[in-house]
Amino acid sequence: MKQLPKFSHSYWDTVEEAEKVDERTARIPRSGIDRPQDDDGEGWCLLRITPPGQKTVGELIHIGDLVRSNYSMNKGKPDGRVTSVSEHYCYGLSEWGIIYVPLDAPKLMNGEARDHYNRYINELVAQDGRILKLFVANTDEVFVMGAKGQMGLFRYG
Image (cartoon, rainbow, N blue to C red; front, top):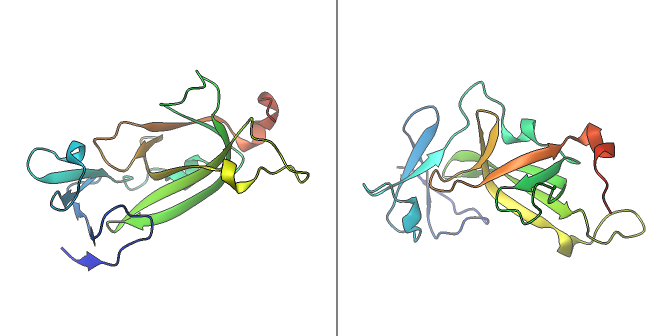
């Protein structure tokens, strides 16, 4: 496997290029990764890939969208409004990160919230129209609750 430079958002000391298993999955060696939940039992961590021809996270979620995660405490209501969607590369694979601001965050005079209210969800990959985490062992999911053009459907602020 080809050794790549360490990315600033990576949790590990070394970042290797993932080996593609099929159009939906890649793998990296488990050695040196302190995340036993990601081990497939044979010494590999399995990663998700957005299959060719399917929409990416950047095509499914946009600035202004209302989002919720499956571990939300808001019981079916949005967690916040997306302020940033960005693509990154981890293990040589495309993965996405979003920044959102909680709907109840106090607003400044210009209508924006202070940066310390930002919430981050990283290592996102799209498969079959769903927004999932990069590691197959992680079953977390992000849901788009309201599109940018539907802002009037939800009350916020």
